Length: 461
Image (spheres, rainbow, N blue to C red):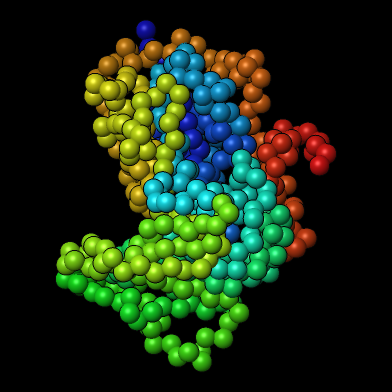
């Protein structure tokens, strides 16, 4: 009796899931791969987590698109794991399941006042300006002075989008509703606060330099925030990226006051850790920070010196966090699916047969696209080893017809969208941008996305 085709489901069609599917498809295994996605469109955080004025990074979608358009990996979008189907259902139709659901929630920042009206998570804001269909289409941009907490690229993205004039986003794929609201923003000053010094900032050199080229927006740094201990000097000498970041920041300290003539400003503050969001009548009216001092190894200690900043909104950009999945173990502290090099493990540390993880839900929200590829390679390597070791016993699916899972989903009331459906949506978004000389304009309402993908008339409203 010949070995059947290995059936594998991958849950999550962002870069991690697509890379895993691509790598798996190129192994020696005779394999059938279905790629499930909760949203009507694939590509995950590359579509919904990258600022619209960063088309260079969005070019990653081109590479991912080429993988899926080959036709050997089946996209099943608009299907929500945990609602439309669960682990036992997947086990019926597949021999192995790989979870690549990423990290889309904001990490917590447990300081007083963080839940006041006017205090937001950066991940939610990014989802809004990127047109994520699961977030409200409005956003309360009413603050003149704003604080952004964090020292990574997401903090820079949030600060830049808040400070940038809306008309300068028009050439991008920014959704129409986002442009309209940004156009009304009264913001004049955005303050970015980093707990440690310039040499510990996690900005990429290119992202940081871009701040210096935003039209009619000045980037301001403060010489008193520039402190370098032994750990800082070691970081500068050992990392070209750190050296470039520090050089860019240091160059900005040399600006003369008369050069700063823009109508909006981004202030970068180092050695300030947030200790409280100040409120009045339930709303944000300020941010209290504590001055920190480097202690020799690149870490900091609070000095007890407090400073209050009058701001009307606070955005925390202190990291992303994973979400638990139905019937799958979850580490509530790390925000990941517990695993051993991609093999999902239970509370006793035993591998759940046929269940794997890759991407941020596997290792946490750190690293770049290159890390995601190597991550996927590790997971797929272990899956291959498990198939080789178990032999025919690995092939546990009882319904092996590829059509069976689609019939099941239809019976459950789901409306799966395949690759041809995404191509319809892609073409429609491009047609929206064409009259304005833009590559695309994102279609935001979920029901509109589904209707276009399934070839139906758009709903009213």
